[in-house]
Image (spheres, rainbow, N blue to C red):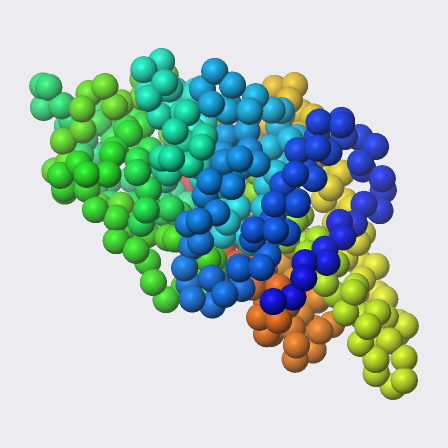
Length: 392
């Protein structure tokens, strides 16, 4: 088991822009990842298994709803703190960050923003500690980039709702205690419902044979005449804008998280290049290797500045959906290119589990697709600057 020697790059002294609380939150998360995630994650990824024993620790470092108010069990932190936690967790593994991100932005966030006070009191404190785990049901087998076409639906049966349909590519679904599910009512209006494990007709089959996010549990949500109590409908917001608002929060976290994966690949490649001797000298002395490393740190630095500014805008309530899309697309694209370049620098060793790079590279193939594909985010920017949507 190799020690975690990670040193975070900060080429433009971005730490000077952070508060002491920001740095304390980040450093606590970083230390936890080094201690609890790095030593085990390669083994769990090889076995395609999520390490459930880390759930309690994720809760303790603020990995579940750090911006949720303290009265509901959250830490009451700001958006930059949330981003920094996601950065550190994804530095460990994108799949672990997915678990954290889904719980925070796609389960706790909608209950906090759109739920009743009874729902907040019932679910949020237990979600914050990891006693309850949740998942988010939006994507369907035939409706990915076009969620408004969903066919999952519910009918008013008088004293309850009857839910039917299916969702897929759902992180956490195999072990989730609750699911925040988006479905159409009889008028075709989209609403959010809280579905609990154990409700008759609700099943969560696991998705196997993944080459990506192997240390994350992915599955389906199947609803076969599920009776959902009326008090489980979230009344605060309906329409497609409700789940999209949740995705804004999650995509913001991904923009930070991808930097963590990129940092880890860069740091690994830099250390390897200094130690690997070829032709009588370290490969770090060769021009092509220096070009790769210089481009990596440049792109990481640009992404850090982008997300920091986005975090300030989020704290001020000014960040737009299109701005979040730009950061998600840019930073994941940046990370996947750095992972590929770093893999080449390590030669044959780059494909082994001895180093984290190949695992990051495979994981990022999912991150670049989920919660808005690379191309869809490009078109969101295009629609924003031209006023003409190209994907409808």
